[in-house]
Image (tube, rainbow, N blue to C red):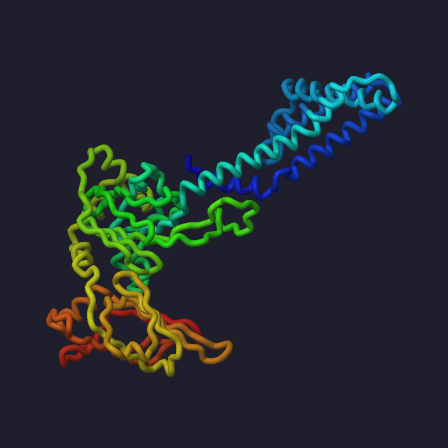
Length: 480
C-alpha cells in the first residue's frame, strides 16, 4: 500500500530517532526515580507508605492530565477536574511497581522472594518500553522498504496559459504489466487572478511575467516501471472536458538519486531505495493539447486529447472550483461571461496556431557596452535558451523570443540586468508579414539602447530587404 507524504515523514522521523528513542530513555529514568523512592519507603519504613504515595501520585497524574486536556488556546484551564480513568490506570501501574520493588527489597535482605514477580516486574517495566520502541522502528523500516520497492517519487509541475483556466480532475499512473495503479484526485490547484478587465490594463511586462500559471506542483508516488498515465481536466474558457490515456516511457525519465524522503540526506538505514524520476513540466494547452517537458526539453507532445461529455451537475461543480480558486468575488454568471469572452476573443485560437512554430532569426544589441555573459532567451514555448552575444549574430531556427535578459558586470561590486519583454502576438504578426510566411527567410532583430536607466531603446526588425520599427515591447533594468 502506498504511503502518503505525512506517513513517510512520520516513518522517517521514527527511523531517524533510532531503535530506542530518547523518549524511552526518559521513561526509564522516570521509572527508576519512582522505583528508588518506593524502595526507600519500603525498605526503611513500610510498604503501606509506598501504596499511599502511589495513590497521591495517581491523583496528581489524573489532575494534570485533565488540566492539560482542557487547556484553552490562551493558556487558561476552562474546567479544572480529574480523570477517573487516568487515576485508576496510574494507581494500578504504581501499585504493581510497588510489588516489584518489594520483591527487590526482599532479595537484597536475603529474605524469601518470588522470582516470577521480580523478573516479571523488570521485564514489564524496563523491557516493554524498549521492546515497543524497537517493534515500531522495525515496522516503519519494513513499510518504508516495501513502499520504496513498489513506488518511485515523481515531481509533477502542471502549467497552463493564464487565459485558459483549467481544473485537473484526475491523474492516474499504471503499470500494465503488474497491474499496479495509483489514482490522484486531490490535486492542489493554484490559480492566478483571471480578471479579464484587469488583464487588459496590465502592463506588457506584467502580462508576459504572468502569461503562464503554475497550476500545481505535486510530489506523487507512482508505480515503479509505470508505462501509462491517464489525465482528465476541465477547461472553463473552452467549456470542454478532456480525458485520455497517454504513454509514459518510464526509462526516458532517468531515475536518479534523490534526497529521500523529502529533502533528507542522512538516511540511517540501508535497503530503502533513494531514487526519484526527473521532474516533469506538463503544459496544458487549448484544443486538447498537452506538452511534457523534462529538464527543459520537450519529451512528448500530445495532440487531440479526447473530449468527453460530462453531466451538467459535474460541470457546474468544476466551474465553481475554478471560480473559487481564482478568488473571483462576483457571481458565477459574471465569471462565466468573462470566460465566454476569453473563448470568443480568438486569443486561444491564435495561441494554438503559433504553438511550436520556428523562425530563422538572429539578434544584435548595442548601447550596453561589451557583454561577456550569456543572454537568456525565454521563447514563446516557455523554454529557456542561453546564447552568447556573438552566437546570436548567427541566424538560428528557434521559436520567437518573448523575454530577453542581458547581464553585465561592471566590476566586483557593480552589475546590472536589462530585461526586454515582448508582445508575442504583435511580434508574430510582424515577422509573418515581413517574411511573407516563408520560414526560410532570415529575420534579424536589432536593438539599440539609447538610455538604459530611462529604458529608451529602438527595436528594429529586418527581413526580406525591409526594415520596420517594432514598438510592442517594454524594458526594465536593475542597478545604477
